[in-house]
Length: 291
Image (cartoon, rainbow, N blue to C red; front, side):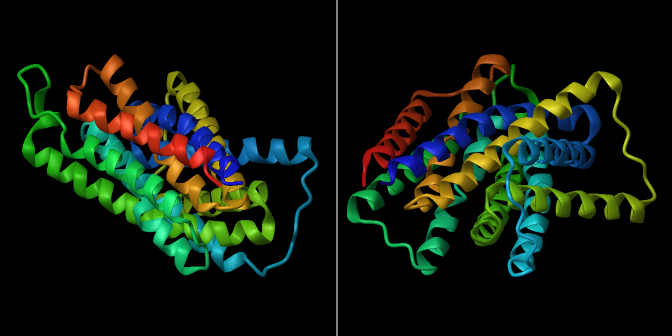
């Protein structure tokens, strides 16, 4: 059944949507690199607790270590680029563009042997078209929106978001292969550990000490918990039949992020974008029932 994979992906979308919205404030409060490092440290603690409580068996083989390291480095770099896009540009532009990563990840998955049917292809295509509509028809600058909606900033945000999408597509494919060896919890733990090492090396090279105000600690903990849950849900979906559906369904996180940006940040969302959001929801609903 493909429904299980799509539902895991939808769960990932829900928590990632809130996480991306929160990342904007974390990036503004402590800086993108410090926010990324803090998020990953929290992720390590949360994942270790889950492994211990759930009694997850750890496979100590090095068979999938290359995939784990490659995926961990990719996720670390992609997270920095994503947070930069969310912090600098309109959330309603950055999030939908990054959510297009399944358009790159699914063909990679198919090249590795997965074979969706015609109806599944239609549902996946509809989901990605909806994401594209949300990003393409962003409302132009208005007097009360300020510099975020200037054309130059939208172009910069779009390029950063596209780069993040490409990096995530490759990284998630690598982590998927690592999951086959280690299972989702251990793969997430390893991915986070690699990311922390990457950021620790960066701060050492720059001879900088990341600083987090006490009133921002809760935000990093919240962000780390949500992002880690999103990865766990996604990789559990990847272990299901038609795991590529989980990747596509997870793209719906942009709907949650855009809605939060519209409600709390007052970012403009026009009728065409609402139509795109409806298409995304319909595409994911189809994936959840097909198979």
